[in-house]
Image (cartoon, rainbow, N blue to C red; front, top):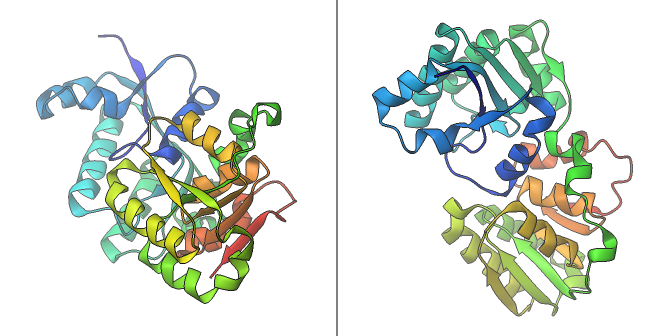
Length: 289
């Protein structure tokens, strides 16, 4: 088997943000590439190890790199895979990633190890840069990959129909507390029709439950849309009047397409969204905390 480029597109499961990262791959990877999870799904462990031996360049695109949801099994898998890729002689790159600060000691040590191991690493936010630059002298600060490639996700306004609905994608319990606290700020969306969309299929239950509760609190009738691909999500966002979410890249997609976005700041990552936006006009963003 000839050498190939490998892109880690969705880990452990696909969602809206990860699919947008994959859509950016051709901007960061030279030549053809294979998608890591597509390749791994059809191979047992020994077959996967043999496959990794032929990796020429392994690229991780965007996203929060190890967070509170990263379990021990996933962490060990990452440690082994990245180490083996390097031992097999491949280049290892992490592009515009978020390096978590508020995680366990073991995860912080792992992040420091990855900073040391990678041939090239860039981070998307100032806090990650400050926290980890001492572990890598040439650590680069770039911004979020979707924002950097925003033209790929900007829908043509001429293709927008008047949806007359609010787009809702919420999966954190804390968002409901924030909504109750800031209820008066969402007056413009009360009583409107709403579309709830699953943007992270592996969190479908939570997204339906929390998003439905949001709609009930705002007296909005709603319908639920499953997830198919990122283009479908962009179409629903482009046709909406308002966006209500606690998902970072749903908020960014809304802002790219000039929508009024109500973002529940349930984490450091979301509260720091202003640092990820390279465009100056943040007037459509309403950050609720």
